[in-house]
Image 1: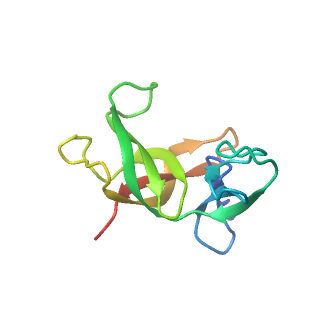
Image 2: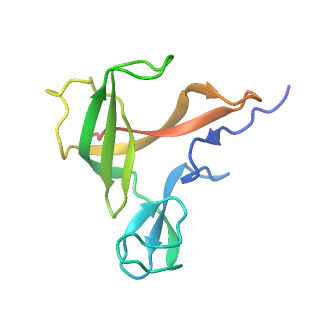
Amino acid sequence: MAEEAQPLPVVSYLKLPENGDPYLEGQKCGSCGSIFLGEREVCSKCGTRGSFDAVKLSNQGKLYVYSIVHRSFPGIEVPYVSAIVDLDGGGTVKGNLIGIDPDPEKIQFGMPVEVVYQDALGRKDREGNSYISYFFQPANG
C-alpha cells in the first residue's frame, strides 16, 4: 500500500514543515517593520529595496472587514464569507471565514478570529494530489 503524499499548499506563503504545524509566512521589512505576504523586493510602505526577512505569522487576529458572497464560480457553494483579517503582531490576510453563519447579525467587525488549516474543499491537481488551505474561524474565548 502506497504512503499518502502530504497535501500541497494552495499558496506559496502557506508553509508545511515536515515535522510541525502549518503556518503562514510573511516578509518583514528590515527598515520600517511592515509585514507583507509573498516574496517582494521593494517595501510598498517605505520604498526600501532588498531588506526583507521571512517571519512566521500569528494564528490569531481580528476581523477587519468581510463580504458575504452570494454568487461565485460553478461548483463553489454559496453563500460564504470572504474576510480580511489583521493578524496579531502584523500582517493582513484575505481568506474565508468559516464556522459562523453568513449573517451580518452574527459577524462583528473586530471580532477575534484564529487561522485554521484544512483540506482545500476537496480540490485536487491533475495528478490527484490534494491541497491544504487556511481559513479563519471565530476564536474560542
